[in-house]
Length: 263
Length: 213
Image 1 (spheres, each protein chain N blue to C red):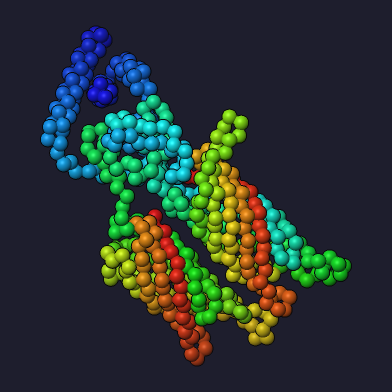
Image 2: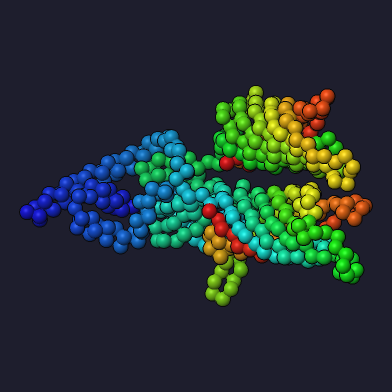
């Protein structure tokens, strides 16, 4: 182990001389059988600290395990899918390891690496993408939404909602400002303030059928529940005021539930 | 001259090499003796290539109640949330064929050609249930069976209908980043095209290829 470490440093130290490098690399690859990928910037080289780590053929706990990497062996992590990492061993075996098996991993200087699975309170990804379904003015509706967190308290959201009534069809596109007064609570209340455009398409069967397009302002609120550091469940209420060209503005209420994924 | 430089460089290299070697050895010995509570180093995971997105195309057959079985062509984009769950958005189109009534009555046409163009889009949540391996000759391929359900919108006869769907499918991973997919889904919606409100079940079967990146 120590030998290979020294050699790799020697490579750096003697970089001015080409002959020397190639000779050292030759010895290195003969003893270690590794490629230059081990020095690739897009990978993490680490030393196994647990008694052993099992390699799986595919990222998922149900797939077959085909190899065990022993303590003090080096592995190179170079790809991830969800909580799984694709690793290469020094003798060239390639497989997948779950994050939970990497808690005893050290870097090449001997320092432990932080591979703990974050808890819900460590959710830090700023983007979210979600789907919600519910009821708007008695009609079934769904919302597709994406958001970006500017500060722990303030996010911006873009929503596309479509409601399917018996005789009409509504499409609402809105931009919302979301305020979470207690972002560190697992069940965290929020308030929204938004503006958008609502289009109503009426069924042509009706005599006075006429499509409408109005601006809308909305207020609302709800609850976000952090399921994991990646997933949020949401319950939301919104009241939209349609700024119509008629004498009275129209109010539309909306209830919905759904989830968002952080990334 | 050259060999002199080479010798000098090599000597320097050897010195650097033994120095780092000693330093390393010192720390290892110390580590063993006092085993200090070292702070965990944060890892820069962003430099690893992530492969959580899936993009794919598919072709198949969708049976639209009253409008026969029709070719359907679609595209999908997916996001793996955990090893168990994934999100998937689909867009597909089909051209509806004639109803039995239209066929039997000869000249009667209930819908124009434009009204027969059907497009659906939806977003669903899937769960990977049964991981497995498939052996073909001397090769072994990974696979999984999943269930999926979601909601969206179906447009035909110039009207949009709320549609929910549920179904399942099978992925056969040819490589890490390429998979063959086979899906069966039921799209349920309600329309009033023939007067009375009618809930229709539209079965779809399709095959496609997906890329992960």
